[in-house]
Image (cartoon, helix red, strand yellow):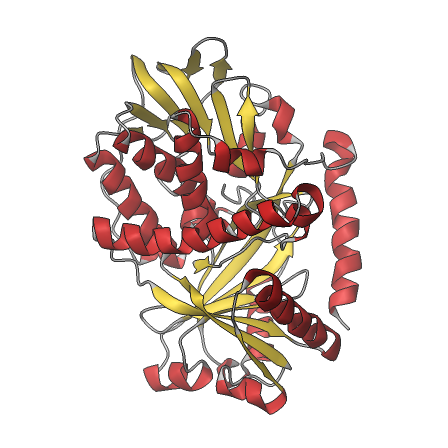
Length: 433
């Protein structure tokens, strides 16, 4: 989903500037039939299409804009093991054994990226390594406790550094603890997404761009209506993430209030000297702090710092965004305070109330995947695999997620955003200590 309030911001994505997109795919212009209809050609929809086509289903994907034009092609590129919610919702609602299964599936989601890159020959600058950072004594203690707990309860090992030891991983004056994880990593998300689209098409999947679903008729079969055509299918997968809210009344009104679109923004610097990049982050890892309103960053393959954060819970683009982002980057890396910023872009991610992914069914033949809450680069691949298994009658793994209870955001359509803005202000004050 793009930031319609700022056209220039939408068009200045480093990712879009660094790839050559294929020609625009045609929009749907006639009635069609398929075994499965997929709404949304981002990571989740393309992953589902690939897995379904491999099982012999005919698949049609309808995309309102272009392949990976939303969050899948505009994000930080960080493929991180685990969930934005942590393990707590799974442990509290489902118990320790299902929670361990969910954790193991998140590990498999990283392996799935490895597998697809190799199998489909996707050149997307995939690099292993991730740093989880803390910028205060309180948050350093929280990070240490979490590293110890994950090792004890889930067998997940990360190298913990504190004090001066942090400088081995990142040359920044603000961090007091770091956990280095060699399982997670980072990639060029648009290159990866376009590679998934090519793979899906090679398997026989039909993808239509510029084909927003205006109405979805439900029943024993499903019928999706676009401006110029329709698709009738036995099964459907809603994989549009927070863009579902744009046409929620026509497609899935019962689940739209369970997610909230949150704006997040990125800058890309001018190319840096490769030696400086190695000095600042020797392992070339992706990085993210453990604040509620967090910063995340990494180096691109052409040695630009891609720095993200400065979230907006009001759907309005913050004022003076380029300056604010550059100031935040310079606080992390004072060495880059005079480096020009070549790119500034943003978009929306979809969050759920508890930050856990929200997967489920509407009736017996319509599935939905939403609420990735900033961890979608890895989890969308898993989600597509799980929903394909469920369509094929193997729903055990999908149902672990479907059994999670999710609450609507409070306040209804008029008050949801103001309520969230107030909550964000509270957490921003907590992050300061």
